[in-house]
Structures are given as structure tokens and as C-alpha cells.
Length: 232
Ligand SMILES: Nc1ncnc2c1ncn2[C@@H]1O[C@H](COP(=O)(O)OP(=O)(O)OP(=O)(O)O)[C@@H](O)[C@H]1O
Ligand SMILES: [Mg+2]
Image: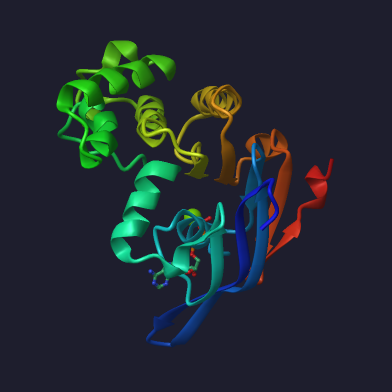
């Protein structure tokens, strides 16, 4: 693995069994993400963007092929080490923010640190700091289920970043928001990426979001190709 590469996939294959036979979603996909890069994957609905992000983030395992993260092969890690890897090195933002609605914004953001064994006090202090960073300092005590869509995505971003990950994945982070809110989340993503020296990979249908990236791939037929519209 080259020194400036943080994440690499080789010959990645993902097949889902289905009643109608096997569904091949990723078919020999290769990818290299450089440290500090902001990259996007675009592609039609059902092309496998979410599936790809899950494999790269260690949320699911490939049928075959390899995902290497800072010279560690994710496929070879036992479940508990993979969970620790996700907790410490990966931030993930889902299209629907995936927060616990009955818990406050602060509790949601503190959760990854509690899982890691930090004291409640330290975890909540850190959660508050991140909520302020995403512009939600005033909402720490609101239940997540009572926040607006944009506020939920901000909270989800704070939760993704609270544990100090190296790589931030976001799956359609602006997918369910109106244009104005979506533009604000876009600016926030770019700002956080730069301010925290992150490596970011976003799956998106939002061409403005893709247009801000250093690199854009199109996922089609189970593989990635450079998206020429955005070639720099
Ligand atoms: N757990 C699963 N079991 C079976 N099939 C699945 C599973 N997850 C995804 N698929 C199928 O794999 C294909 C790719 O799905 P995926 O969610 O990765 O697409 P996507 O590019 O993210 O689409 P969208 O833009 O709509 O979010 C789809 O045909 C989907 O039905
Ligand atoms: Mg998807």
C-alpha cells in the first residue's frame, strides 16, 4: 500500500443471494483513496453505492476481494477488532440520520465514546463540543426525534466525528433535505473535512456536492470509472 493511500479496495466483489438467483452488485471493483482526499461516488439508484460504502467502512463484508485500511486488511479482522476499527477510525453518516429518536442530541453524539469506555462526563463534554462545532450547541438537550431534518444531519455528523476518525463516509448526506438546508450541510461537510484533516468519501446524487470533490467516480456495472463531467 502506498504511503499516501489510506484506503484501498482490490477486486472487490459483493453478491447477494436472492430468490431469483444471485444478485451481483460489485464485480471486481478497485479503488484507492489518498490521505486528505475528498471524493464522491455517483451512479444510478441501485448501482451499489451504499453497498460499496458499507464494505469500505467495515459495516459489511465482501464476498471476495480485499479492503485495506492503513495497511490492515479488514476482511481478516475478527468481529470485535472490526467493531473497534469502526469505532476509532471510521465516521459514517447515513441518508436518514439513524439517530436514536428517544435520546437527546447530546446522548446520541456521546454514544460512540461511551461504547469505547469513556466516562459519561468526558463523553458528554466532547459531545457538546462537537454539537457546537456543527452549529447545534443550543440543541444538546433536544430529543433527536424532535429535531428538523437538517439538525438531525448535523447531529449525525457530530456523532460521526466525535471519535476522531480518519475517514468520513457519508451516504447521500443531503438526500432528504430541501435545497437551502442541503446547501448548508454541503458547506458544513467541506468545512469539517478541511478543518479536521479528514479523508472523505461521499455517495451522492447531488451534483453540487460531487462538484466540490477532488475526485468523482461513477459506479456502474459493479465497477468504478472516473466521472468525466467532473474531471479536473
Ligand atoms: N442486504 C441485501 N440483500 C439483498 N439485496 C441487496 C441488499 N442490499 C442491497 N441489495 C441490492 O443491491 C443493489 C444495490 O443496492 P444499493 O443500496 O447499494 O444501491 P445504491 O446505489 O445505494 O442505490 P440508491 O441510490 O437508491 O441509494 C440493489 O439492487 C439492492 O436491491
Ligand atoms: Mg444508497
